[in-house]
Length: 125
Image (tube, rainbow, N blue to C red; front, side, top):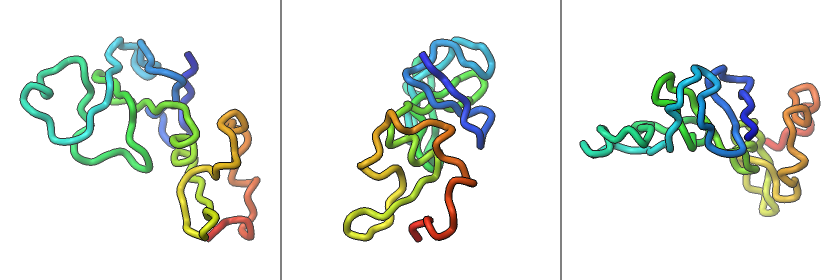
């Protein structure tokens, strides 16, 4: 399993699958994240991580640590594009968050997108 920290937040990670042990605190309390107002049964359930009514920005976490509140995101093109705060225009000219369809998930690496690699004329706004 690969689990990499996200540079903007020390307690956010992008992972290839759900981690068993939290890399932030070392506890074995990483659970599936559930968004919304919980029922009493959900509130007492140790097998889920309650996010609450306000999702994470720019994308909801997939898993969370019940011990230290660390956030874990599934490593895919959808999540990477939003966490990297990449914006592009689609074929109809609408502004979209995330990587364009022509970029493959394999080509996205932490080193491939840096603020220095984008000039103001390339920003699609």
